[in-house]
Image (cartoon, rainbow, N blue to C red; front, side):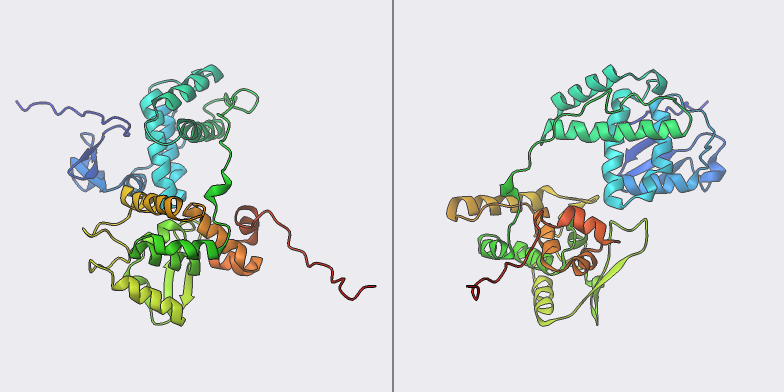
Length: 357
């Protein structure tokens, strides 16, 4: 008599999932093998976003199925809501829900009260091992709030336990002025203080305004006879938006210099070992360390204020007229450009009084 197979739930993963040999796998329930290509163990994907997309496409989610626990609500959210977002957002969202599942997955959604939210918020903040604990706690709680909003929509609960009047996030930290590049000249003056590949990365970002995730995913396949052709990651699930950056002498020179960087690779930017500087939509420790060392060099040897990588994109959004900036940044409308990327300044033309008596 064969030994009964025991399915051990891996912490934070959906039921019957496990991570094995570098991939997420689904342990197929007995009798359902026909729906999974006859397999008892089905490979879903090598990263969480891919795994959830595969899983969502393979099973029929009963929209009228009973949802009682947070684990059940999270499963439906990840299958119905998350796949409509960009890869980077999906990865971020999946990791956050993994945390929520670990903490309260077995609890009843309807039994959740505002005091539970405060207890959860404080615990996350205290257990945070990197970055700002309060910022991370707020991020998790924002996602939990949206889960409750969807639970109301699904008829699981009738009242939201985390409205503004019932629950408060940690206060948001004030953004330091030092974290924003104030001019292209500032960034240009800072370039000699970092390594060659980062110099080229920043020069390409200044020319294109591309998001970090799009720049770090560039390969020689993006090179066309007409220019650099980029499929924008942020708009992947709303419209297949592409940008073509037409060749000019400077763009051609920068791309040629990047392609000449060691080691030889299909990718534009890699470590000496050939590894990407991005993983599942987020920059790696290697990228962040290079950036931090650059900012340290500025502090030690110059009077140039340090600045964030993201602020370069904001800077690009402030240079052109609103319509041109919106097109360069890949926004679907000028509203996003105006709200998030334009400086909080109104440009006016001074009155010429030199000929006045």
